[in-house]
Length: 249
Image (tube, rainbow, N blue to C red; front, top):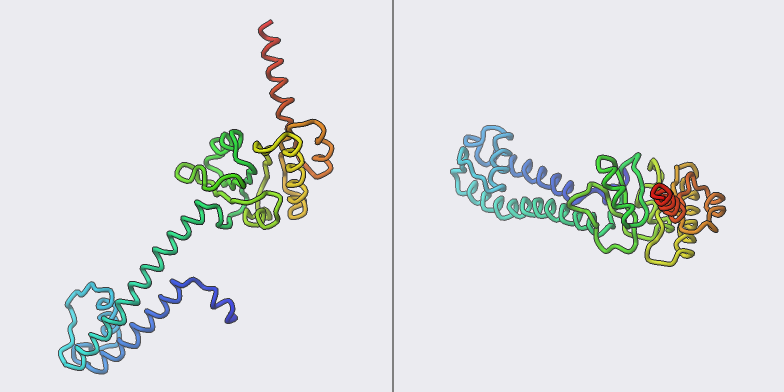
């Protein structure tokens, strides 16, 4: 393993190695200083670990002045190491939770569904696929909309940016559903949908893509961009309304 990769290892892993070295070195010291009280290295190491963790079972205790002086050094240095370890673990958990809430953490799973755009349709889809792996991409949200109730992961960003799609692990996904942007007019929403589709096809030419269009004029563009299925929402709703009306008359 190169030095560059070593430096990228988690901080808690470095602390575990450092604590292990600390316990081993001072375990040897106390065994050498007081071989009667600590007849083996392992008993010395056990006592050092219990001492720095402030548990203090009392099964071992140094009798000599040198041993007690070493104990003071072990407590002063070791307690700080242990505190740093637990602080790092807690801090990492907080940072991870914050990243999930803010949508800045990359998704690392596979065979997931990618939903693009936060609206009533995607909210309904999340309910239908509650037991499936789902990633939600949206740029209008400041926080995860369903962090406490849904296992989906939120990625904040523009869906037609390569970096956003890479954060959502597009390359390992199983399908993409692109919903129309509800914050712009119909023409702009469909143009953004086609642009997003083109970006997806650059990164993953074969992943199934279901797209929602608001205007019929962009259907040909969506087909040429590589849409697997096109849903014209206005036409679909219009037909449903017409069928309902015909049943009443």
